[in-house]
Length: 273
Image (spheres, rainbow, N blue to C red):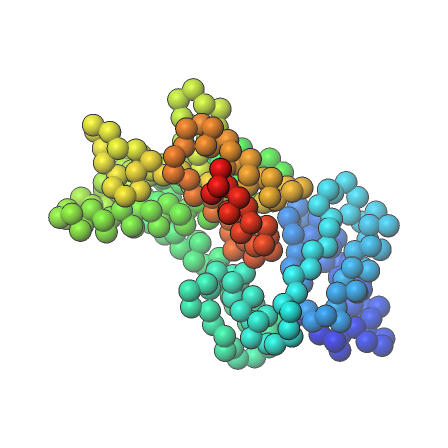
């Protein structure tokens, strides 16, 4: 969290260098984006540091080098605390009161977010179900964010179907077994050149996967994409053209918050198609 005091007087030069170091780290390690929390005094310094890095070739050969500012219309503390909550997955019950400084609070939120995703893999059966992607979303390989989000979705669907089958009278073990048999990953439909990140079997003579039957779920981390809007739209159109009738596109919270205005408009757009 950068504040007004960080960008005044002699501290300006050191701040610029700190930002430049983070930019070098960002691109040298192949990350897709960086988030800097700060008040309105910081914006010009971040933009200036990025411009210097571009001129000096620090970010050469990288397409996505645009500084995107997300600014609440007011400087009220509650709004940027809420924004941090949303970015790290606390949507239903945001934690608005915190102890200590804002930096530590954001780190704690991020830590909880990753622990929640990793927790999906504690079950061995879920580990078996969640196959690595053959296509990848970042530099030709699957990012950890994509893989863990996929695992989180599989765990959610299996848990939801288990409860649904129990409600129909199945015992716990039988309900769990049926639910696990309904969900698959990296599923390639016959004759198609695409793979579904997560797929719930459709109803047929041999299986009935309840309310989730025929659902396709695609995870879009938006890493390595020049235009986030078209990446999501291309995913939607390709799946619909492949005959998918039920589709969820899941964008992890950090990216969803960054691109929220575009994603909300895109949702309204595709619903009219």
